[in-house]
Image (cartoon, rainbow, N blue to C red; front, side, top):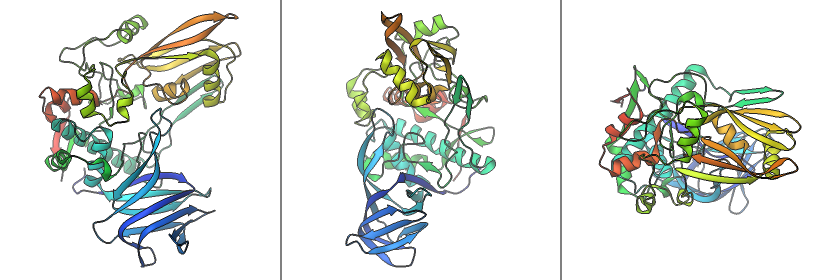
Length: 441
């Protein structure tokens, strides 16, 4: 296991053709020169070009490193966040650490931030949730995020870089997306890995205290750092690992009730219907606007119905989305049928039946992606129809539960637990059964 704080490489910009960078202090470029101020980066055939504000060429290489020579920062403009989700937008963001500009083969480049793990995490816990969230939650989120990241890096060291598995048969697409498939960097800066939105997100002294209090602390199970997953809101019950990723049992990532009292897991379609259309008690079942304002970033507050939600989509629009996402025309969509669910009600496999063909899709994220212009909030949903025209439904109605994959820590649930007086160790013990806290550096 790890014994020292590592530096990590975080891709803030991926596959950009151009970008504006402002160096807010002195940086040393690869050729030894010192530069600062406004710069422009542009991707070329097999290199990246860096020019100053006057258009003078500073460097042109396959990889350009800018090393901070003092405690300084850099600012990026029009950074995409929430990519392909309904909250996608652009922000101006400021970061600490060094810069790597890495050319791709298609005249694009990646901008990678090399930074120490603890400085990175200070931004992550303020980007994933609000920096004004309860202190014990901030500590629990820091330990969870730190554990997930280092476990992923250690797995990548052992197994090498792996691509996201895809099973494509004539009438079946099963795919899951994990985070150890990045080649030129360790993690990306968006929801695919962990939100990392720079020092502009660190607006609370509580974040600095949470980082200091938990420095080097990890969740450990049987002498290995835990692959500590988390999502926004489990919907009343957390989910098991194989629903979203590979078919392995992870002992500390079990399906548990997000409440003091244990509820029964979902085992049948009838139970899924009752669970999803009901409103069982849970830590994440909160509509307290004051609490939500304190724990959620501003753009997440734009999603008020996360515990139970509804989406109504006209059939023709849904057919178009499915064809665009899958490349397959199913014809007139007749029915949407869950074939396999996890214990929180999240669908693992789903059958789409059309007049032209049938299509089976999975897993959790692929289902959410396939049925929405961006993503459905989760795959824990039941489907009904409205109206009939020419023998086909006019609209499909999705009634759903939760926000995200639901595995591991439920962020809103954990924040509410902290609000109710639970400590960070108690919160982590609730969501990661059997895991132990251990300080490793």
